[in-house]
Image (tube, rainbow, N blue to C red; front, top):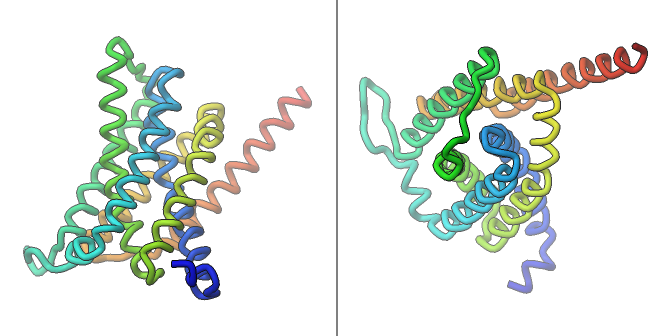
Length: 238
């Protein structure tokens, strides 16, 4: 264990995996922030913390079950020429759920549908369940990525813990920014729909390079940032 601290290759894999886990976790944070925004103000932060804590527990638990994770990629059934594994089915279910959730949220934003909080406890429970379901999908993909990069369980766990802690710190500022700028929220929902589509494609063995998705997100985010700066300057001049 101690000798790992003096191995440059271990540090390189740790830093690489940490950065990848943070990047792959951005869509998870966006989903949690938008989903939690349906709750009353006082319940949003606890929901975000529970969601990210659940992601941490699931990812560490899955890392200890590496043999089982690897078995998820083994063929399970063949339907019309497509061979599916448990991982494929989980990605398909998660992708369709994310597409449904993003579409429902966009509809609510467009039609100004008001969400009732008359039963706060039930709403809180439903939101947390939704977060945990998506956490499971993102966690399986994240753990498979970790297994492919690092060779030591200790390194994988350390990278995942650091990445989740960074996401916990970033979740509240991201949620606040999205709430203050409705157009940014719509863009974030479009990102979620795109990630959902990518998950469905992966489940159908049509892999879409994540680099293309994140490049599109970065470009759209830069355009949105320019729009926000322009609106702020116009408001200041007025």
